[in-house]
Amino acid sequence: MENGILYPVGTPIGNLEDISLRALEILRKVDLIACEDTRHTRKLLSHYDIHTSVTSFYQQNQFKKTPYLINCLENGQDIALVSKAGMPGISDPGYYLIREAVKEGIIITPIPGPAALIIALVASGISMESFVFEGFLGRSKAERKKKLNQLKKEKRTIILYEAPHRIKKILPQIREILGDRYIAVARELTKKFEEII
Image (cartoon, rainbow, N blue to C red; front, side):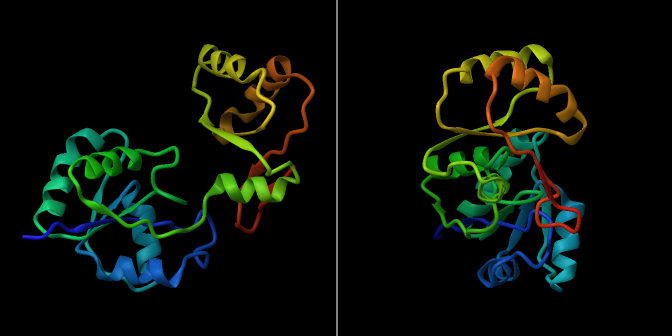
């Protein structure tokens, strides 16, 4: 039996209309959708009248669920992998399934879509010639301090993710460690109350 294909599918980061026709086609035709947030994904699927089966795949179950999904792929099932928003594998557990599928010789066919880091960078007015993406800095002040100190001498544009409830705490820490730099803070990208400061 031929292996199935794993499709990491880019989904909207806010506005449900920001999805490609190809992504919709894949979400309709696969045997299963592995998703970081089933409620969020079902809302998207309902909006486009897609009835494909879904299964959860998130940080707390990724190690347990990966063997099951690899087995499905090895038994010829095609699977779409979706994040809560954006491209799977970027600051979410999707990378783990993709890595394990690659190890097993399974074909990976990414279906491009939005990525918050690129949208924020484009809207920021900050140089896009060369940049580094660091994801989330960490929950504790010590974790954030360690990562920021590692970035202290970085000359390229630095892109970070941060939870809305922690942003006020981290901005003074960024200034203290990284110094006087031009920064942009983006939130609610592609949504009604989008803001880039």
